[in-house]
Image (tube, rainbow, N blue to C red; front, top):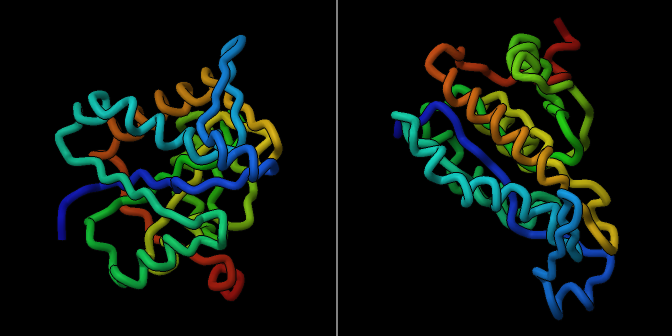
Length: 201
């Protein structure tokens, strides 16, 4: 296995309420008062921009940071399903997975993972547990047996005709993620504990 204690995950596909106009000009973005507005592109671009614009900040860490970019999350997590089909076991020595694909300001979503210690650890960086239904880590984590969390990256009005990104919220999350990476040597290895298994104990 490659040694990498953490993976940053997100998807690069998107859905727009105005599909015809989006396909004509998919990256039409405007900025005003610390917000960015776009046609169906904010949802997926938040994660990609945070990672690619901050490669140098991520390179400060001695251990390599792995980024997973999936496709077809909006179509039922087809890309992440293919990933775990190709890699039935995690190819990295991970402590946990961070997904950057949640709306809002400071949410942390764990889906069916009820690992209390992991939830408390993530919340210690300033996040608050919220609820979600489906995303890439809800496919990846059960297959690999690793805990994962989906963190807010500041967008809202996802899948609407005009989506919004609060730039300051996105960078607040980046600062918190950098703190998590800085703490990775002290962090435990967090195994996924599924909701249905927990209910049987």
